[in-house]
Image 1 (cartoon, rainbow, N blue to C red):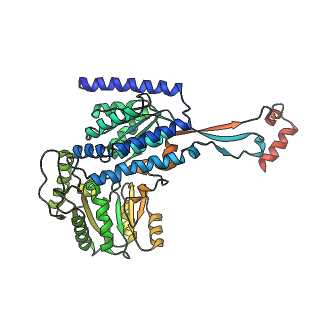
Image 2 (image 1 turned 180 degrees about the vertical axis):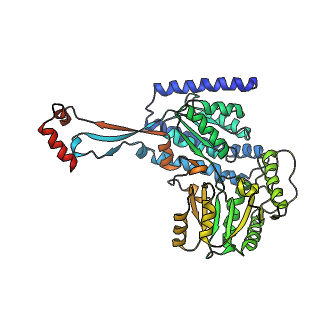
Image 3 (image 1 turned 90 degrees about the horizontal axis):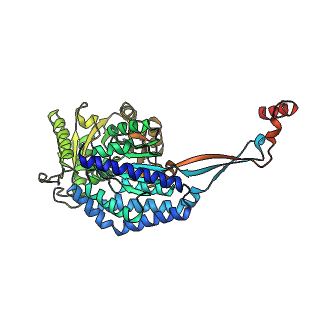
Length: 473
């Protein structure tokens, strides 16, 4: 371990201790302060929107400013506004009924902050996936430490600067550094740990948290399938599939990972997807609306996956483009792959890039079996004109979330919980579900000064027999 990393880890531990002490000293953060926390965050994101867009573009080599506005700035502002508007009702105690044998006592649930929480943010949406979990954590009254990805250092530094200007370090702190710092971050005994990233690293995060019995939310990924029913027009499906797949150059956890289309339509669908991608992002190598791959390592990984499939006999279609340039700018053109070998990395690993395998199916029963034989995906998309067909397909499959006739938009519905299942993660956030994630729901039974339970003391006699009959109904 380098001296710099060791110093950063020691400082991180000091920040954690300071947040723990601050939480113990002031656990019940009132509504007004929480609301002000959210208002400050909203104002900062609006003010620094251009700076954030420039920072993430510099980290990527090129990142579409429009996509940053849509998926990061706009998304975060909508989340903060929705949470602020609902916060008072979410904070309120929840009364629950009590059985007659416990009357006249009262029972209710207090939603209390868990304490000091950690948020590990990935590089693909480094602003949204740091700040969107921060919103419900602040709303719940928690203290928060954020570990951004080392792949987006400029965004990490800007988060540290801007959040540092809004909150004291014993309230919200940003911890920067590489993998060693990240590992030490996950080893801290947080009251809750929130991780967004790969399934592989997610397993290690869960193991680290288990040592401290820290509850974890794992927002992972996987191979999210798209299924086209025989009743749906291929040309129409291609339009939104192309948008959903190549937005942010496919570096989205819920992007369509592969498509199952009725056999015989594979070529037509592939041609239509490429044609639409070419209309959306002509000349992707020099198009400012088309996002580059975040690093040379990830660019090479995607290139190798496509070349492996090509050597295995697959057909590769791409939007016309010049070759990617050097430095940190790696533009990989929108790509569709037909007949990818079943054992190729394109079909066995999450792609996380602008490459879309297209396969044929012999009916929705076969498509469902194909999906169910694999790990449960974070998202599933089904295209059909029939509500009954859609419902039937959902009955036969499992996924974290679902889009019918469009990809990705389920994320934007504030009151829909977002999360995975199985290998795509566990736990959820967005809307009230996010608020509850960072709360401890504390059970309270409040008895009056005198309660009839006193009459149940030994020696048991006729009164006990009366209560026994009441309990038996």
